[in-house]
Amino acid sequence: MIIDESLLKCNPALMPNHPSIPNPIATVMGMVYTFQQAGVVLQEHTHTDENMHVTIVISGSVSITEDGVSTTRSAGDIVDLGTEPHSFTSLEPAVIINVTKHRVVVTDAVKQDLTGKVAELDSIIAMASTMKTSLSGFIEA
Image (tube, rainbow, N blue to C red; front, side, top):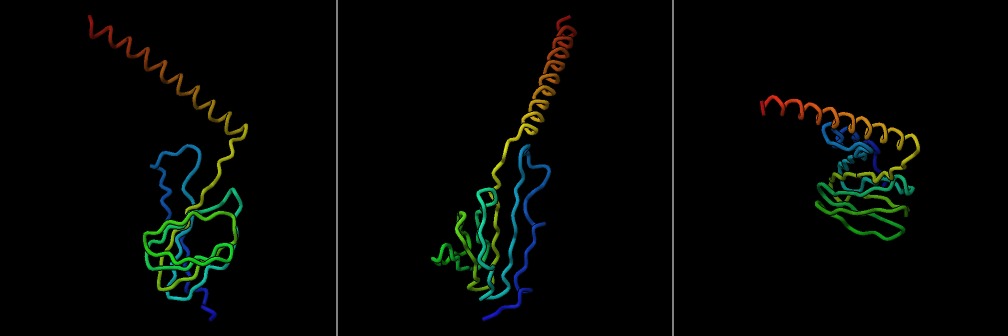
C-alpha cells in the first residue's frame, strides 16, 4: 500500500533545545514524527556513528525494522538504534521522537575556547575572593 507522504509529519521545532538548559558543548537534537494513520512508512535509512538516534514512542505503536528484523514498539518504549539500516511503519496513529546522539568532537578550537572560559572563570573567582576579603574587613571593624 502506498501512503501519501503528507500523512507523515515532522516537526524539529518541538525538540527541547531551550537556552536555559545548561550544556556548554552540545544541544539536544532530533525530530518529532507524527504518523497520522496505520501503514505510514518512514523509509529505510542508515546513520553514521556521529548521528545515531534513540527513538521514544510517545503514543500509538510502530513496527521498527532494523537490519531485516521487525519488532513492535508501543507508547513508552525506548529503542536505541545503531548504524544498521532501519525503518518505521505505523500500526495505528502514532508519535515518535528520534533523539540524535551526536558525538562531540573536541577540536583544538574547542579546547582553546574552553581554556579561555576556564581562565575567565579563574579571573572572576580571584576578583570575588579579593572583594570578599575587602568586605570582611568592614564587617570586622
